[in-house]
Image 1 (cartoon, rainbow, N blue to C red):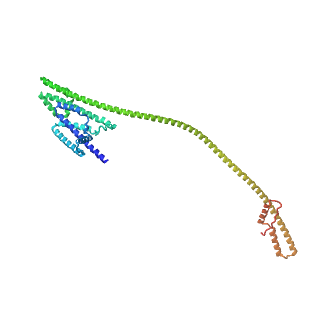
Image 2: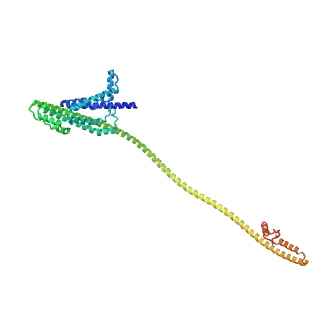
Image 3: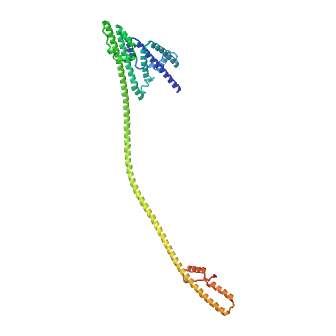
Length: 445
């Protein structure tokens, strides 16, 4: 990469040097042509227009120049020239041309130097963006570069050509006036005053100078014939220059029109290809849209069917929930009914048990009352028997009597535990009448 960039930089420097030499050469030729007489100047311009092309010759390119030098060295069987040697030779030539230019500028008048500097500046402004390889990059211009060349460089080139045309007309007029000044002394004074005028006055007098000039009548027919011949030659040269300029302009416009037509043709081809692509894309999109519409219709039908099925399923789910709720309520009702039936059975059993207990309680109370009555009767009988025995014994055995009395009271006097025991025996007996009380009394007083 470094070697290629170095070679590219060397080629660019050589191209810049060659372009500078070519511009100096053309400036020197222009200055020498302006110093020549007008007739020889027109002849030189005519020869240059026939021999020199509008673009610089290919030898001004650095690669072509180096190839020519190497070819010459190979033909002469000499050593191959090095880039340093080529650069030194070009530098020497540039210094010589610069010295000659300075010498010519010292001999030129100030108004001519100003005009030459103006033309050089305008030519350089137009030649700044000229590529080194114009033939290779002719087809590589982008649309922006073409637009810039058409809208920016084209008016400058037209203005430069118009200015050069006016200067040619002015030189022809000056030449005709100088021919007349050879016979009339006051024409020389007018010519010298015109030479000392500014370039702005020269440009203002270009438009009607060649048409408004009327040569004064002369007495000599030979001088008149010579002047007429020179004027005819000047007019022919001016007309030929105008024709060449117009032909060049027409050729340039034709080339621009051809390039525009080619660009428009390529643009039309691109647009046509894009149109075909868009048509294919449109057809494909239409097919996709129709397929999508069919899918959407099928999806809508399926969605309607699914909605109906969902509604039916929802109704079935609601019905199933209601049936399940009814079933659960029925089961709960059955369970509650079974519980109620069980409670009723228990209630009946409890009621029967309470009735039996109440009957047993009543029987026990009656038995207790009977036993109390029996106890009282027996106690009364015992008391009567005791009293009778006292009477019979006459007061003997008082201690034994007391103990017998206590024993009878313990055997025949019932208490609460004895009554409860009697109730339990009667309860276990089922309330039958054959159940008898087989307990005695207690020792509770």
